[in-house]
Image 1 (tube, rainbow, N blue to C red):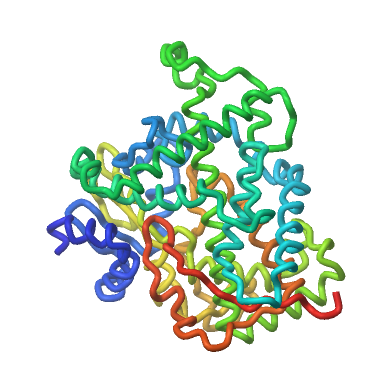
Image 2: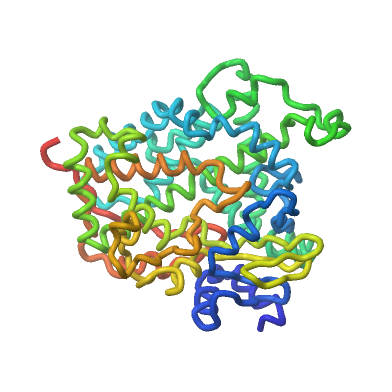
Length: 469
């Protein structure tokens, strides 16, 4: 079937590509041709050879089939030159120092989430997918535009959030069919609500950004403070300048902010939802983590970004294992071999061959992890402390939840901080359990499809305020 690309493309459109790739790698090994010009890898060498960057070597470009609504690429899909420019402009905002300067803003949202949840706890099972989406969208909207969606406060999903998730599903079709030159045909067959979602998302970003630009001189402590201190480029004039002399134009900023809202919300909400599911289906781990958090932190307020990172080692191990078992981005994003060809994992590939890795395959093969189908946070202990059977786990660096190289996730510091503080405060404040009489609860991940991101079903959880606080 690797002689034809249609089966591979069809599995991506159906949402089961992650399952088929894992099955293929388990059968054929760590390097498999899954389509005429696409080779999937599960070894860590792929990150160094194709996603990393060696000075003087050409970059392996991303798949260019996807076209943003406004035709202008943001930080996720820009070419090498523009990506470097965008990354430089936002580097401070996403640095550890920049994050600490924004901690009060992030903590305010998390504390508001805890207090609002207390008003609903103990009454009926709560959909944690919904609640975590509310929180993370509120945080990234506030940090990107200086305005929250107020989802947590209103306990309702903002229409933009719905549009973003529909837009992601549309993006799968644009990415896959764009490879065949069928975008015109796509506009005829794709459900209108998915096409409308692309336009609506663009309009929401435009409106929010216009308001933020009106207050460009204000220091709000958000991600746009620095870039809005200078006037944005006129696109026509900027096009006459060498790329390295350009600043940022409004359409570029719209695409970048759209990237921030998507990547900075849905992925973190997914990881948090997955963490709750995995903890409740593994009582030993759940009890151990709750015990550590409640013995380490005297109050909920004492759980700061720094403290969550430094004082709760088992929390970090649990989150790493959650990222392995339930990676927030399980889709495959190929890179193309540049002119002249390249050697990957000791094998030479000609120009144009697409190299890829899928976390759901790499994270579940025994060549990378012992007992890969089991949820075992102990595998992430320091090497001199971990059990002998896990000594060779991730030995080749196959586990890269935020990618690696010059295009690794610019928001990884923010994501780690949100994940750690939110999960720590949530478990410190609440006792959780699986609702009685719910059938199929343990299959929540197993039955999920992937359209770039996980298409999550509700995750209903009994939430009760911890006694004695």
